[in-house]
Image 1 (tube, rainbow, N blue to C red):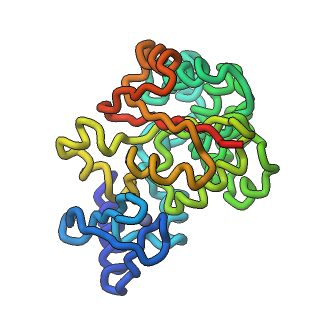
Image 2 (image 1 turned 180 degrees about the vertical axis):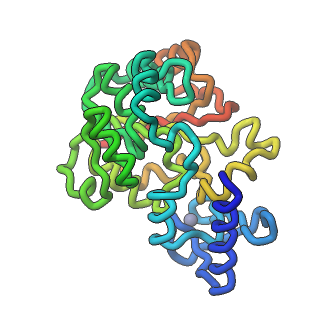
Image 3 (image 1 turned 45 degrees about the vertical axis):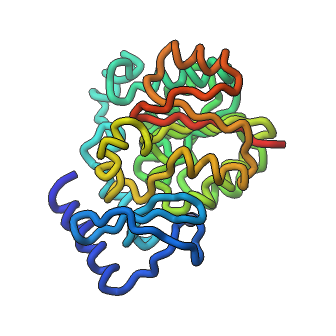
Length: 293
Ligand SMILES: [Zn+2]
C-alpha cells in the first residue's frame, strides 16, 4: 500500500467521522448493541456487534467510495491484483502458477477431494488466476469479479467466463452452481448479508461453499496480528463464532471449520472425521458449509 493511498484512506475516514457517519453493524444494518474493541491510530474504531458477533471497522466507505476503491486503488502492487503482461502471464501459465503467490493448487486439491467435479463459481476472482486453476482441475468454472478491468482481463487473456456485476449475478438462475469458492474475499465484502443470501440462492441443494479467509481468531491473530488484519483492506473481520451463529439463517448447514496448512493431513482429517472438530489455529481459515435443501 503506497503512502498516498494510506493518506486518501485516512482522509475518507476523517471526513466520515466529521460528518457523523451512522455507526451500525454492516451485517445487522439496524440498531444493535456495539462494543468498542479498540481504537486504531486515533481515527478508526474496531467494533464488535453483540447481536451477530461481527467485528468491523468504523467509519466505513460509502458504496461509491468502495466501488471506486476496488476498481482503481485496491493493493495495486500485489500479484493477486496487478495484471501481468503477456510475458509474465506466459511464465505463470507454463508452470500452472506452481510455487508462486497465485498458486491455489493445495486448496483446489482439497476441494476436489471433497467434491470431485461440478459447476464452480469463483466468487471475487480478480483477474481469473484461481478460476483458471479450477478449470484446469476439471471443474466447470465461472468467475465473479466487480472490478471490470480485472474481469475483462480474465475473459480476454484466460478465455474465462466472468460475471462483473452483482445485479447480473443476482439475475442468474437459482441453483446454477454446485460449489461456491472464495479465496480471501469474504473479509472485503461491505454487505456480507446480501452476499451470503445470494450464494445460498445460486447453490444447488446440498451444494458446497468453500471459503478461505484470514483466521481472525487463529494463533497469530490472537497474539496481536488481528489488529493489523482489519483496516483499510479488510472492513470486516468475520470469525468462526460469527459464521457459526449466522450461516444457518442463510440456509447453510453442515458447517465445518479448519485452518492452514492445506496439506494431506487436513484432507485426510476432513474426509475421515465426519463431524469431529478440526484444528483452527492456523493463519488461514477454511469454512465449509452445505446448502440445506
Ligand atoms: Zn451485527
